[in-house]
Length: 48
Image (cartoon, rainbow, N blue to C red; front, side):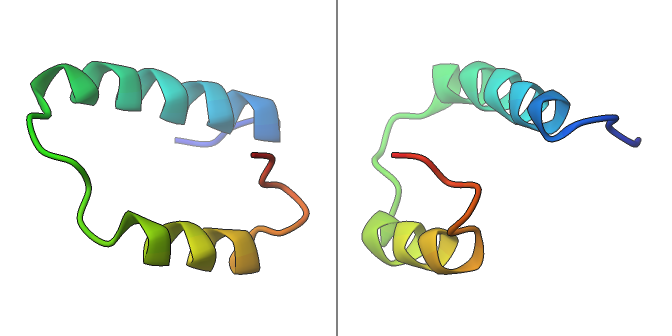
């Protein structure tokens, strides 16, 4: 699957996560570490 824009990717990820979170019962382990890695790797694209 290819995406024409970064926004298309973000929308697809958002919708997939929204659907997946319906089944989540626990918090994400080590989320702080994961988020820090995302911020380093995608510093120009990640907005918090």
